[in-house]
Length: 175
Image 1 (cartoon, helix red, strand yellow):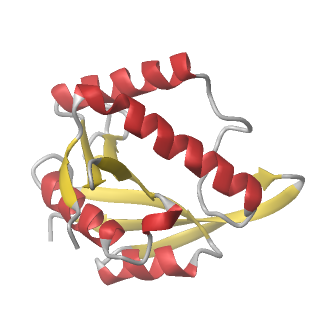
Image 2 (cartoon, rainbow, N blue to C red):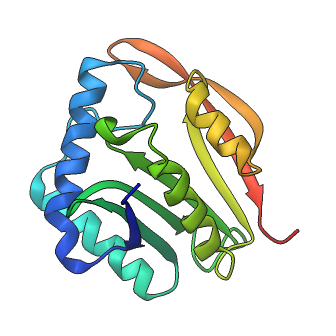
């Protein structure tokens, strides 16, 4: 496995944009694909604003943002954002991970998650994530890293007039 897990860089935007476009295409073709999306892909300008905002959170120590690079292409991303900076929830990091469909089941997600947890240990006390209840592969990966389920939100995702349950999981980093 020649994947390189590294911190995101300013010039990664185009690769991140392609990764996200692929995610939207996958969700359109597979309604059970487990990610929470806007109804349609945001514009390139809106994605740029989101990307710059996340980079700013990294600079302010309110986020961790890593990418998986393979043969010079970004094939995955994982970021952890502080839940409500300056509040009583600021010790919690909300984790999001994505690996391009063509690169799944090759250990890239595992390495991204391992690296994100390690980088989060000095910033957050608890990690929290949301996953489709039906996404057994992702839930198994999270459980292997110690994440535990703490609830189901029935029908919280509405995709193509179909309701999908959202599951919540957490990992305590301070134990």
